[in-house]
Image (cartoon, rainbow, N blue to C red; front, side):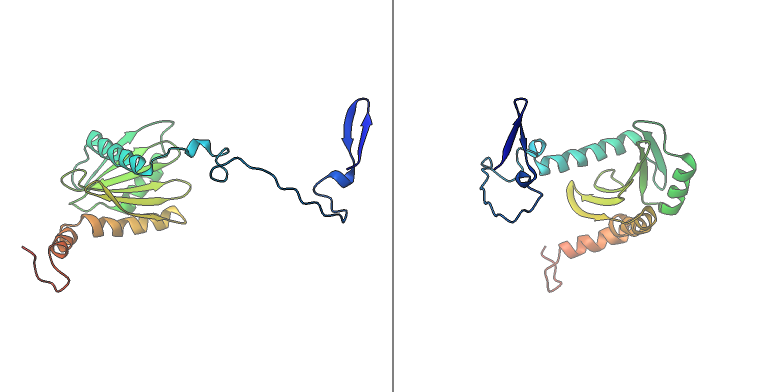
Length: 192
C-alpha cells in the first residue's frame, strides 16, 4: 500500500482504490456479522409476522365494509386521507365494474389511489379487494382465509379482470358450484 502523509492527513494513491485495476491481486476476506445476509440493513423486517399482517388486513377490510354498509347492487364511499380521488375518474371506474345485484361495494378513497372492496350477503364472508394505484392488485378472502392474489400491468386490465372475479367468487351460481364440489369425493359422490 502506498500512503502519503500531507499535513498530518493520510492520502491514498490511485493503486489503493478498489475500482482501479493495477494488475496486482489482493484477496481480503471481510467478516460480516452473524445472521442472515443483510439483516443489519433490513432491521425493520425482523420479527414480521406475515400471517398476522394478512389477518389484520382482512379485519380492516371487514371493518371498512361494515362502516360503509354498501347496499346490494350498489356502492358506498369512505374517504380515509388526503384530497379526494378525482370524482370523474371514480365514476368511470364504478361504471366499468358495474356491480351485479348480488354484490355490494365500498370505494375506499386514499387520495392518490383507491381500493374497491366488494362482498355479497352476508357482508364479509367473501371479500374481493382491487387496489388501484401504481401497481394495481387483486386479493380475495373467503371465510377470512386469503385464497388468491394477482398483480396487473395497468388499471384497465385490473378492472376487466375484477369483473370476472366478482362473478367467480360472489355469484350465487358459483358459490353453489363450489359448495357442491367441496361436498363431493373425486368420483362425484356426496360424503354425507
